[in-house]
Length: 104
Image (tube, rainbow, N blue to C red; front, side, top):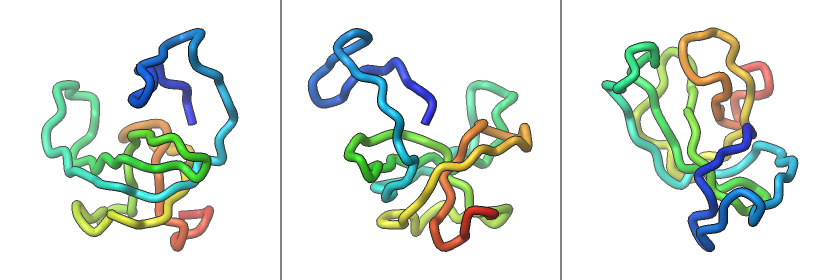
């Protein structure tokens, strides 16, 4: 996952207080929300954003992709993995359901 500089939601630590670690990019969706308008006009909408509990423990926020027919609901509890999205239509990395496979 790309490093974020938001800091830790549990301890409030920032910068030197935090360790950078390589993560597998797999986890479980805790909740999701459908974004229909974004303040940056270059961000394609609609876009489903999720709160994902990674396998290693941290919680991250990221774009969820389910193909062109991306549902806005039903994500809670879905096992996902991060993959690069070079389409240029949205975020450079998205989470997709494990059941879709690595080529989804």
